[in-house]
Image (cartoon, rainbow, N blue to C red; front, side, top):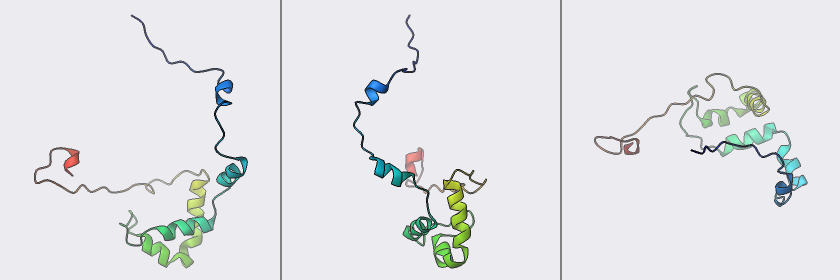
Length: 111
């Protein structure tokens, strides 16, 4: 009985050199630049104001409406997380509610 064991390739440079470069140095530099407060605000303003509220009870409308007051703090928190700081406990939690599609659901697809 033969067994297949995983192996780790050792010299892939010959193969990798055959793959054409799709991301140019100028593109890479732009992709790797740090996020900005302005980008955080742009993304927030692209969100639908009436989306379901998060665990804090606030929907995007609250953050959009009071951005002048809370924008610096929110941006600092978002930029810290995007920069590698750990996400505080509870910040990424969410509620999920399953709504029945059928009278007597049996499978997950029935919701």
